[in-house]
Image (cartoon, rainbow, N blue to C red; front, side, top):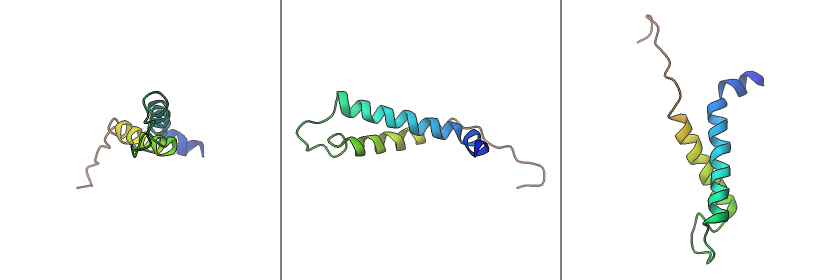
Length: 71
């Protein structure tokens, strides 16, 4: 389990950071009328933030080097 967490630490931190950011966006900016599809519901806002955090943090991973035998 520890190996999994270490291997995917950047992705996990991106998900957590995005989820917190999504909730903060809902709480401080949100939509009071209920007509905004993302910001009117805290669960959707948290999920959207988590997905965006994952995608943004995933851009910063190091690329794996190819060995001589691989194409």
